[in-house]
Image (tube, rainbow over all chains, first blue to last red):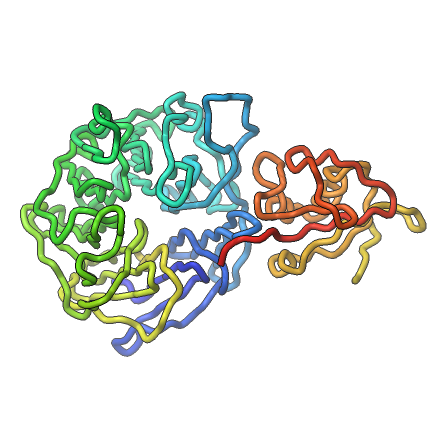
Length: 360
Length: 102
């Protein structure tokens, strides 16, 4: 069970701890700088920054409690190629994940490069196979940016060579050989905003976020631009979950750590407005594999709330009891009972891009 | 401002490279006198001594970052991709932030 929560915002990293039954801000780091990803590996805390002027940076706090700057993923020299519209330069680190092997980390980035570190983040190697695929040039950008981005990296807990990534926008890609080869695997999805005839193509699917059930890794949930999906075969065949309430649009999803039928979403009105339906902040929870949903509201604002939760703005701890989500309005809510009720720390935070428990 | 002189021999006229205080919030970046014929050589001489600074000023392709400016004697450089603008002795190269949103 996690007693520490990290909240990455437009203006710094906030460290929140549970003390005497309440969640309080106990540390503020990188105040003023945008934080795009955060990861606690047990011994180390990682924070990725997207400095407005000076690029994307990565810092690590070790046991000593002091922060040090690490190397960042860098792209090789771009060859002359009129067919490649994307820059070969790090836009931002969008997600950091443990690699299932000592000192191994994965970083998903904009403009769509996947990087691996085998020395706990000191140095990074681009997955050249994925990056140099001709299909990669067809990936396209996401809202707010022209660049495609890898928003999700799933490592099978049974086999660290089994890797899947979710791309906005390019579907779900899989490698079963430690990244040596890749194929696109997602079937059964439908992207409403694509031109007629292309809505069902695997590579046009706008994967907002993937979340895997660690105890049942064949179960993967997806918050897609055009709806909510669930897979029971590791992300190959997807079934749309039409029971999602109150709306099917959103960015974030969190899979229960042990129960393959339970997941949480933070729905919003699609697509043109991107605000909570009727100004009410809610969390949608299913406990039956998506057949039905509870719309959870206790402790959440139910009038004139215009909070939007981004892809990495929702997390669940290793017990499935503690959840947290953060919003573009700086709203932060924490639950200790699987989402039945929520409380907010005493703070008015900057816009939140990522929340993560120490053990998530 | 403290001028670091360990890059060049004393008494010679050479270009100076200075950095905005906004960058010095992250890393020490004292002004430096360097042997250089181009902006690229001038910055490269500084980065050779302070490698971490490179990624703050240049992108992965070696071009000036979109939200960074490089001026010579108060004028913007022309070649932000290859940094080929010439610099002469007594020129002042100044690296500072360009406008970006809040």
